[in-house]
Length: 130
Image 1 (cartoon, rainbow, N blue to C red):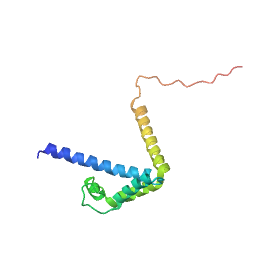
Image 2 (tube, rainbow, N blue to C red):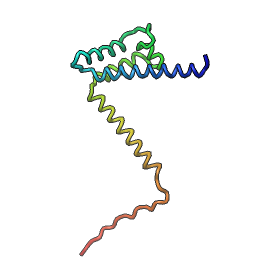
Image 3 (spheres, helix red, strand yellow):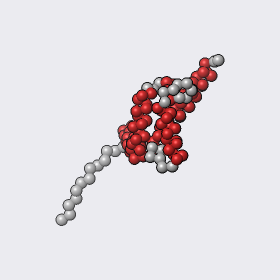
Image 4 (cartoon, rainbow, N blue to C red):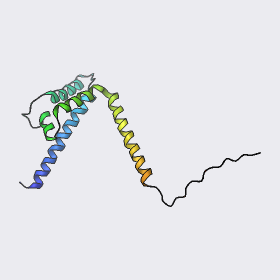
């Protein structure tokens, strides 16, 4: 095998593993308070996947964590804590992250794109009429 094939294969496996982990996190969060049997089954399937200590199949939770160089116990704790927060906690975190990113963007725009030839603003004077 050549090095390019091995690199492509390795990155494809990591991308697939990351996608599986992301889908499990999504299912745990979205279906935490499921009301239908299908939604409960999706939640339980994701929950079983992260809690089983089996590495006999290629994309088991333990193998995914190993491939992505993650500590399984820490990932489990984070996934369960994130799922228990539910919909409101998830969207609150996302909103805070988005606001921070937007603030960083605005700071970057207004500090790096200054026009060096612009004239300083003239202070407004107060006119009094008698």
